[in-house]
Structures are given as structure tokens and as C-alpha cells.
Amino acid sequence: MLFDVPPRHHASPGTSEFFFWAVVLGFAAIFLAQFVLLYRHRRRYLHASRSLEEAPLEFGAEAVAGIVELEPGQRFGARVEIYQEGKNLTTSKGGKNHSWKEKSRQSFSEPFWIRHSSGARIYVERANNIFLVDSLSRTIHDLPLGRYRIAELVRGEFVVAEGNLQKQRGSGQGDYRGLGEEMWVLKTPDSGILHVSAESLCERHRRKFSRMMKALSFATVPFAIFAALMLSTYLAQSVYPRVTSGNVRGLTHWTTTHKGRTTQHYGMEFDYVDLSGREIFDDVEISRFDQVRLQRGDDVAVLLSPMGDCAGMTPSLHMAKLILSVIAVLMALAALFVARKKEWWEGALNEGGGGHIGPPSPHVPPGTILSRGD
Image (tube, helix red, strand yellow):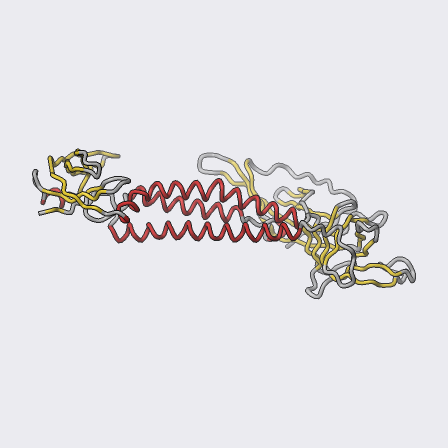
């Protein structure tokens, strides 16, 4: 009689098969998502690299690019104020850190000019709703646990503005200059939102492509290789199953104690002939039930494969390898989400750091607009 004695600490065949395919399909989905995103960012990068700055001005164009010019005394063309509230945190071991959570944001717009590469000047109208993409160049920490993070479109910056380009005669009053002069005017589009970016679309998609490529190269591929190593024996046993007979040479019993708790262990010593014809002596921990029904000299099933052998008739995954494979998938998925992190203009700005928040710096430059959120 040939006994089927699966090793202890191995998952059941059904559980092993489920998690094997979960890991394989999980990595397949992650690779697919990353290649799709890489292709998308690459395509958008190449499209944006066709220099918008050099494109001729055309009536009805959706975007113009050039250098920001402001009126004398004007401090900015667009501005975003993000008000954050801070919190000091202390860990159970005495470590200190802090967090800043966004509570409100407000945007401000002023008329400004864009100097096109052709030499023409485009007048950008004041927008009721403006979406600014720029660096957070200033921080005003005016309360013990409150501060502003500020982005401003200032003189001399390269900008891409998306709106509705038209020609219009200046009235010589209000925002318009040049009485009777025909001038280019960029109006707010039908969406009601004027998009203004001090960062070229080319650079934005290059950065996203670079982040995704790093996630693929330094996270997904290494974790996939690690998971493949964990699953290789199970895969080989599933693809090339061959069961042979092993002979029980001895039954063992031992105990271990951890934190005052004693655990009983049962083992089986057996020998068999592997695929290369060598006689192998091995031992494996088994359940108490299996040891009770076995005797010296009994025949037990041994599953052979080119990647490794295992007691039992059906392939099964060691619990440690199963858990490590699942962790590898989760780490690769986390790297994908980190690579897709949002910029401050795409979502709430929540930040943190080590140490507690320092004292405020109440000095605010003259003319600064500050609108604290409720």
C-alpha cells in the first residue's frame, strides 16, 4: 500500500492552486497596467515634444506657449494658496514626527501677457476659475500649527495656457490696452476653467514615464523574479508530475518550547530514488495522524520534479513560500501606486516629516494675499 503523506506546513492542493494563480494573474495584471501606462506616457511625451512654443498662432487655437510678462508693479499672473493644519505626533517609543493636512485652497487670477516665440504678445484674460500647474515655491508659517503653501506664476516663467485664442481690438480701458489695436486674446474655454502650466507637458509626461519605468525595473521585475523562485518547485511538480515510491526508514518525535509553551513535533525519515537515479535520504515533518498510521518499512508517495522533490502525491506550496509570494505581489502593487502618485494640483496636499513642528515665522511680504480656510 502506498501512503500519501503530505508535509506539515504545506497548504492543501486546492489552496496552493488558488494562490498560485492569484500570484501569477496578479503579476500579469500589474505588468499589463505598467506597460499600458508606459505606452500612454511615451505617446503623450512624443506628442508634447512637438514644440508648442514654435507653433504659429492661429485663430481658435486651444493652447499657446511662451514667456510670462506682467504689468509694472504686478506680482503674479496666477496664484494658488493651500492652507494646511499641522499636528505633532509622538510614537510609543518616544519618536517625534508631524503631519500637515490640507484644509482649504483658493486660486487667484490676474490678467497677464504671454510673449510668443514669434514676438507676438498674447493677452490672457482674468479667469474666474484657474487651474495652475507650478512649483510650490513659498511657505508662510504664520500660526503655531497652521501654514500656507503657495504657487505663483511670475514674470519670466515659461508657460503653456489652454483656452480659446481669438483676435480682438483693444478698447484702451480696463484690462485691454491699445485703443483700436488688434491683439491676440486668450479667453477662458467653454469648460469655464483656464489651465495654465509653468511646466511643459513634455516634462510632465517624461517624469511620469521615468517614475513608472523605475517602478517596473526596481520593484515589479525583482519581485516577480522572487515570486517565480518561490513558486518554481510547485510549477515544475504541476507541469511534470511523476510519483515514485519511497520507503519509511524511521519515525521521529521531538518537542520545542517557546515563551513557556511546548509544541509536539512528529517526523518521518525516508529514502527514494530521484529522477537522476540517485538514492536520496530525506526527512520531513508530518502530522501526528500520519505518524500514527505509519510504520517502518511502509511505502510512501514521493512527488518528483526537475526543480525539487516533495513527499506526497499532489503538488502543494509550503506556507512560507505562499505567504512570501503574496507579499511580493502586494509590494509590486504598492510600487505601482507610488509611481502613479498625484501632484499637488491633482489632489489634496497632505505632507509629513520627522520631528515636531517648529515655531511660526509670522513675517508676510507686503501685498501678499492670504485667505485662511474655515
